[in-house]
Image (cartoon, rainbow, N blue to C red; front, side):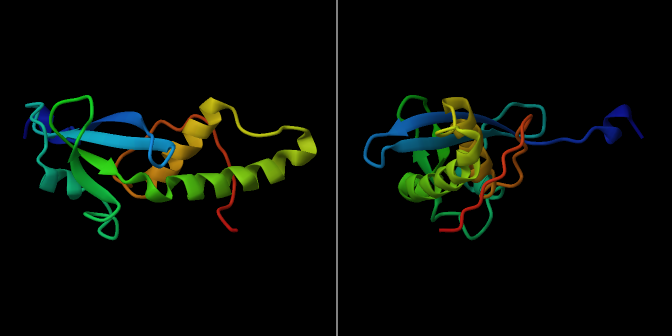
Length: 137
């Protein structure tokens, strides 16, 4: 029994956000690293193990990042705009009584990351603020 037996080993991910001109919305890219202390990049199949099966190879695919070398898990942005528009509209409707027009850029990105975390629940984000808004139309 060594001291390392009590250490929880977890995969780590680098997350980057680019702007998708075609869909006119942010696009998330994830590059995973092994949990064995080697910092070895994960293969596409290994990264897909961390994605909910309903989204793997459909909404989340392995693609080459436009600016960084190596395969990345990419969350396809085709529905991002519609979902985010609904969330922001509902948030704005809820805040209309307070006189606010819409979320700041920082709050928008925070909401966007919360939306993305629903597809990849094994990745823990540091959520230091709370936002409640519905996605009902």
